[in-house]
Amino acid sequence: MITLITNVGQLVTPEGRGAAFGSGMSELRIDEGVNILLRDGCIESIGLSKRPMEVDETIDAKGNVVLPGLIDPHRHFGAPPVSAGEAAPHTSLLAQNGSRGGSARDERLLLRGLCRAVASGTTSLEVKCGADGGDAGGVELLNLVMRTARSVPVHVSLTLFEGRPHVQRKARDDRISAVITEIIPAVRRLRLARFCDVVCGEDGYTTQEAEAILRAARGAGLRPKVHGLGRQPDEAALLGAELGAASVDHMASCGRRAIAVLRKSGTVCVLLPGTTFLLDQAYPKARDMIDAGLAVALGTDYGLAGYGVESMWVCIAMASARMGMSLEEGIVASTLNAAAALDLADETGSVERGKRGDLVILDVEDYRDIEGSIGHDPVRMTLVGGRVVYGT
Image (cartoon, rainbow, N blue to C red; front, side, top):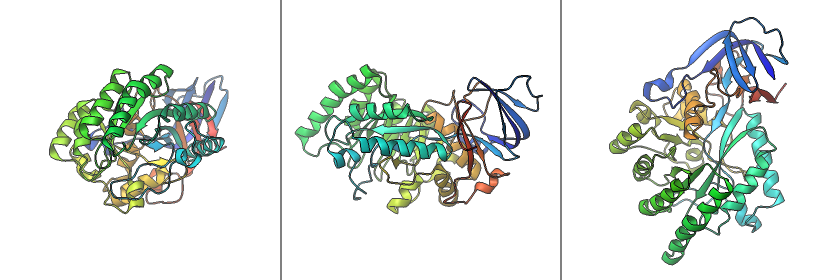
């Protein structure tokens, strides 16, 4: 399959196959008036080359902006967890239906959420699945998401998520033992997940408990991630860096020691402005992290049950308006750096030869026109693997 995208007004993309650090976050390559040739789902060439003799499909960008497809490195199957002292917005899908394996309603909600993501220009995303400290339902939920995702043209990275533990000591110890000896081996045997994410901090596991779970997960071939809930996220950041985590998420700020080890490790800091907005908390100190040389990504924290800020475009606008990030930094944080948080930076996240043809064609002629727009997803067309999956 050969597809030619013509009349691209602006091609806006980060450059590179890994996370962009420090001042590099604000650097985008902007090419005007180019064509993009896609062959067998991958980018073959970018430039003003003549039209190939044989093309299966031609897409006219109509002088509009083309970006890499957006990447959401932080979504949940059900309701996302909340910070210490906050009431949960609603119970998870698992609790609502009383079924460990999920229901037909769960599947419908999940399918709708994934389809809306594609329509808003998101071409890759993470889905975290777990029982939030309840029964061992994470395996069944991962299986449900994997089955459902096959029917939606979006790249889904699955994460085994271990949320809040039981409060009672005996139940807590039993849960940790079950995760290490039963759940992680089952997930590995069935190849259901790429990552394991553990809540570390207030209302979550202690650093020592989280480390035990994550070391077991890493030994089983799952890449660690750390969910740093609470007002002092540095312990989570230090643990993530020590274990070579792909990302540390929910970061609000970063102390000097955590900055040093994160910068050395290359672990990505995932910031979630939508959750900050909903909980009426102070926004993450993105400017300090970027100026210190950290790789920063943006995610929604959206619960596919239907709670949260769903749009990556809204997160980009919030980061620009409330977190001291430039629009250019927001774009990098939602594409290349978000890809790095999912170990996908060699495959997607920028428009370069050899990478997947995951692209979004906007309905604006200048990328700067998307800044400050909240409530409008400026998407005309979404392509995943070189194929049009939304728009005409």
